[in-house]
Image 1 (cartoon, rainbow, N blue to C red):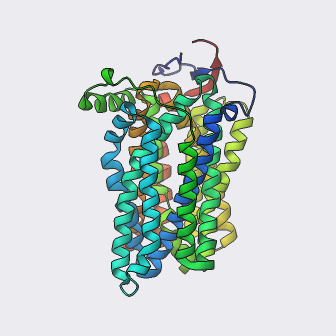
Image 2 (image 1 turned 180 degrees about the vertical axis):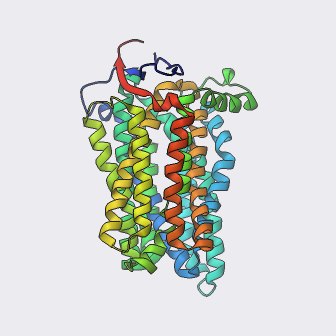
Image 3 (image 1 turned 180 degrees about the horizontal axis):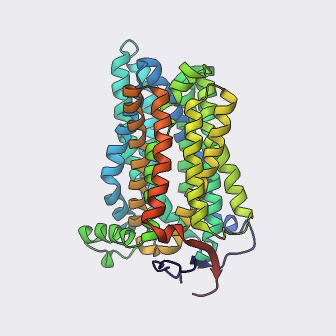
Amino acid sequence: MVSAPRRGKRGAPPLRFRVPETSADPYASLRLPSFRLYIIGLFAYTMAIQIQGTVVGWQIYELTHDKLALGLIGLAEAFPFIGAALYAGHVADTHDRRRIMLIALGVLFACAVSLLVLPFLLPSAPQLVVRAIYGVIVLSGLARSFLQPARQALAAEMVPRSMFGNAIAWRSGSWQLAAVMGPAIGGFLFALGGSKLAYSVDATLMLVGVAAIVMIAHESTIKREQAEAMAKSLATGIWFVFNEPVILGALSLDLFSVLFGGATALLPVYADEILHVGASGLGVLRAAPAIGAVVMSAVIAWMPPFKRTGRALFSAVATFGICIIVFGLSTSMILSVAVLVISGAADMVSVFTRSSLLQHRTPTHMFGRVSSVNSMFIGSSNEIGAFESGVTAKIFGTVPSVVLGGVLTLVVVAVTAWRIPALRKLGKMETTTSA
């Protein structure tokens, strides 16, 4: 059983976070056939999503040359994603999670096919193509809202709690590896064969992901007669998160740092107007943070637990903010890629800490609802952050917008460390054999 740390008093020793004992075998979770298929599916459809995100951004900027249009991509995805998140978590806790994933992935496959055929349906109407692309983004945001809690809950119920840490490392590493390869491949494919080739590969990878999830021999053990009324069910997930100060602090820190410090939405502008590296260069820029994240996930998987987890978390987010400032001011492709790699490594520390806190502290039967609250925080930071970047770039200019975001991230770190001492004092993630 996971022991919940209490809010520490001034001068008290660092809080201890206890998690179940994990296997010394670094491949423990991968020896489970269902989890192996899950990882294959996760890698394939994440690659597809990353390719699509890179190509959509470049395609819209190529058609409009409007920074606000890039921000609207995030807003078009955020509204349905956040709006449906709580209900999606309720559905994930009351229905078979694998089936929910398959439905969501089927919608995402349809979105990829739609993006592929749009230029052929509207060959001489670029503005209509842009509007149709936004419509597809809205639909994909809705599908991802249901996919997110279902996939996280499915991963948690397929492995024993003693393997959670190992499974998180493999799941995060696989996602980040796909996030490295996807943008780079997407930019290369667009430069090589335009949107037709890129979206064809996107749709193919999505099908591979669907096939892998179909082959998983697992069914969620949901007892319908014990399912809570929907309103109570949704409130339970929110109540759980807001009554765990350490979890709430980690989520808030991630939300506001990425909300202000995320520069992803403006990468097409940097690739085109500042660094002059084109679509293939955009793929490299989008892949750079994930490269750092993959390296850091490997380091985390092999290194001992952080002795001062809270300090490591705040240091990592502060490093992320500094990297965003340097990136905003850079006119060198080499320097820009380097600081984006470091920012990705720093962000991975935050991702790993947040995922560990959620999985080890959340009962399996309500993991979908808690994951949906987590998705709302992440969706708010990524998608609304993209809109915020587009608006501020439109008003203040691209470089001032990114630099200001990095500065505000450092402010968020300072305020969170001051207001949530329980997170700041979080100590070593110890292992225990207690049930």
